[in-house]
Length: 252
Image 1: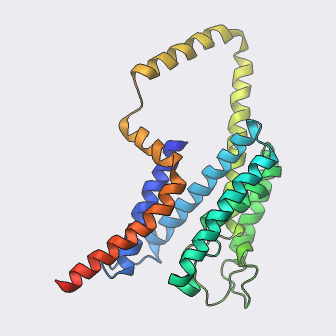
Image 2: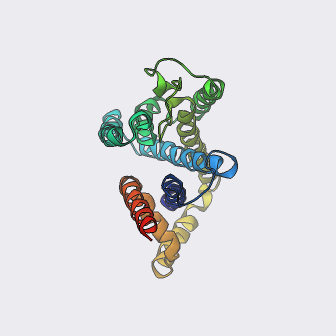
Image 3: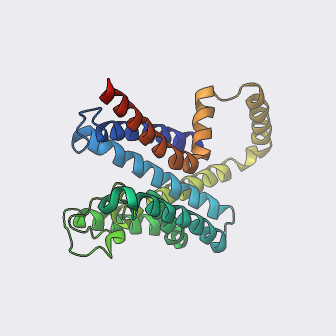
């Protein structure tokens, strides 16, 4: 799962590099149609779904509501810092409910659904349907934008309201719980071969020591484990590179 998250990190950096290139007039890509419209939304959905999967795994390991609240609090502080940093630069386009804001709220909102895949799927479907129904509408007030009631004439750079985006966290959590139940069912069916399974698992671990995962997979897993830090660092770095290249070409 770390490597999968790392893959989404690489895709995110690639998209943001193109976004910055367009912003500084270095590329003529149309980011608002076709592939370039679908691409970033696919990345965001993957990130949020993996977050839901990890929340369900954490709950299965005995994670308490207090632990989830601390995670939400940490992410909320990061989200507030992002909002504060982007407001002076982007003004009406500042990030007021982006992916980090969503993950902070989802950490608490998903808690009652963890271990209940049917409920998670139902709630996820409801949020997805609400988001699709509200997607084309615009409202004259901003106060419920975080829910999915999009305000008119406000186009934030990073905007993932609960409807529909919480759906992917719920679906990810449900997928993890269903996968865990399927694994438990297979284990029960193979109970008579438990001793043989243990020996095979031991051999597998020993083999892993002499045959490590490919370097690319390990690099992706590293990025996945540090995705928040990469997210916070890569955007200012890309903006700096875009500004520098634009300035150099302007002087050339």
